Image (cartoon, rainbow, N blue to C red; front, top):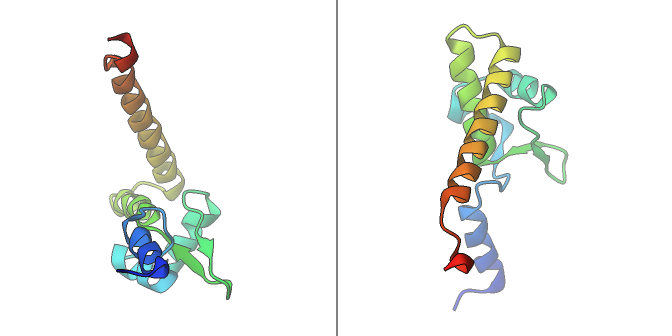
Length: 110
């Protein structure tokens, strides 16, 4: 039977928001520089957590946002515009999800 620590570790592996990646590894994974990730943090697109030693740690969710920003910037979009596009895409996705929830028949109405 797994220990409580092992169970918590397994839960973190499935947590899209767990800050598992160091800045260097995050930059490597998305094909960017640490400076690019710092710029995204300064622009408030991603807000990396800090380790006990003060190092930035990124989640998979943050890496997806950063990778999308990198993709837009690589296509010639200014970084400020890329960040705004991503924010609007997220808002649209949330609105569509909420709209779909509202369209579903409510169980208590049955």
